Length: 371
Image 1: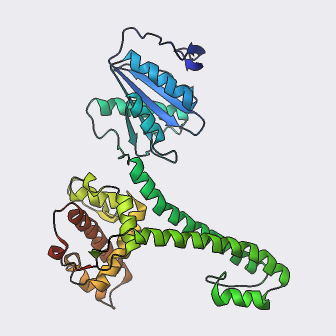
Image 2: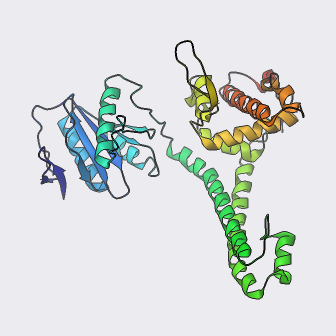
Image 3: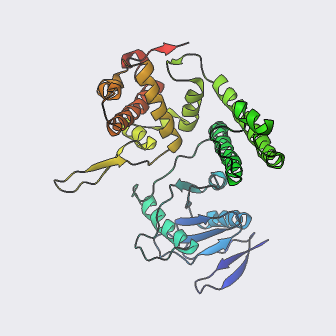
């Protein structure tokens, strides 16, 4: 089998995949920046501290064969690529070969704002950042924690439920659009209950009902699948849990967090939720704004919903002491309540982490348990 390499003049060169081409002098480190696509990878290689070499393009299979050769050239091979839709399969393949790979958070790689962004330029920028990271600059890359295959499988179940919810909303909108286009305006869940009975009993022409039935059957099927997943997740929740924390919410929280022990301190927990305020400070000037939304958006929604529930079912919760009066004041503004509930949700995330890691008990936080 042969793979295509680009030499320093940019010409394509056929190199046997089963034969290692020596690099003189032999480097101690090889660094690879990878721009990943479904059908191909664009890779930039750097030998020790030299300038990055010209980009090379590989199919996924040819790339892994080529990486195996790099391991014969150097003591250590490092690589990195951005997290995205392709998951962590490539990371596991590289680490199985012996490569020290890191998956990094997507970022703007055109730092000079040149207006030129290509696969080649992205791969080169990743290589340069990887070089800084390997040499001790831990801030050069925002490394993403790679979940275990088991954690991914558990999390995928909860995320599929969300996908079904989005698909149901899309199909519901398709039905409402069809009705509105022909002079029938309807709101809500038109596909079930009394709303569907009225439509089926002659409130719309037969030809329109026939078209609508096709959409309705899809909505019902997606809804039933979502309900089955909801029941499966709720059944997996432990009986002993904080009052107000439903089985479904508890399971989605656990599966999205993967491992509560991954966080070293409360700041890391709060940052992962994206519920921390933005800050623009310089010199003696300090300005904070809305939340960063930097982190897991699913967790953010769940925590805010749970914070509202605790405000109702567990007003004695310690995290509500400062904000309980604001949340319970009917004359307060919506903006004040929104700010308060975000603060409660942020504190709640930290307290759940402390409980999960054995740092504190629920009763110490003023929380009652059920089950």
